[in-house]
Image 1 (tube, rainbow, N blue to C red):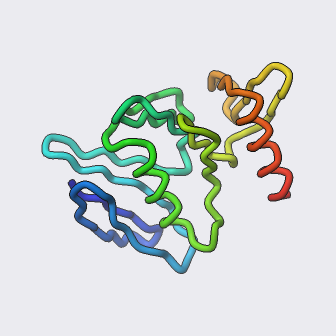
Image 2: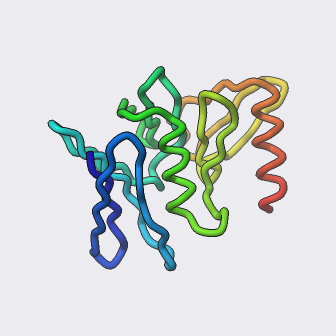
Length: 146
């Protein structure tokens, strides 16, 4: 498997990985695409278009803003590590809220604690139901960011 990162100026860097993923740091803001290359497929996922990631056993579901879902290997914790590495100095908009979800906080429009629901920027994106503990953690994180 290979992990690629396409940067805004058209450059591309490739990193091979076996069980664990390896990546690098960027000094400038760029468009970040995860490219997961398996034996039979190449998946390019623009992180700006990801609403959230959901654990599904040993797989990860990428829920995109256009309502598509990509189910890929490896597990959620591997993507969490790689996403943290891609963003320098803890500036990642992605927050792990529990065992099953990593949420892109830039795509959230509303959090309702009593209804236990999150709404995302595109109006046609289905809302996400989370536990009150996860929602409190997310709300506290967003309050500190503003």
